[in-house]
Image (spheres, rainbow, N blue to C red):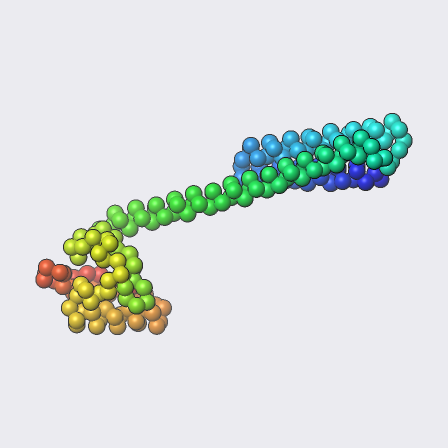
Length: 196
């Protein structure tokens, strides 16, 4: 079998599979259309090769025009495959970024609109996040709260209890769900359900 014809058929088949993959994976008709154009190019080249072979009876082309046309088609097809691959990677990256952004927006809207005091601490007890409700309760801005430790907001007795509770959650990995009394910065005492 003619080597050029074999390569042409392999590249054509690859273009068809790639086009179908793009349609299935991305549901992007533009990318699949480029793949189909590439497939049509290779099928046309294969037909020309077969027609030339049938007309001349020569299975191996000379290093003349046929080979130059064929190698130009293969090179342009490979370039199109590279462009399609880069397009796929860029599109997948954009889809991932969009999904992450959407997830973050949903999380942020939920946390900011709940009437609960929601905050997150690192292993050293420093606040790494606090929702607006918690910031209002403490009478501080978000920027003022970040990096602070509970000792900045509570009595020493409360702080010892909170650190012990935090350490228990860290050591056991189990959820702590309790109701406790908290003293607010203005001196008022409230009962709060705490889940850590």
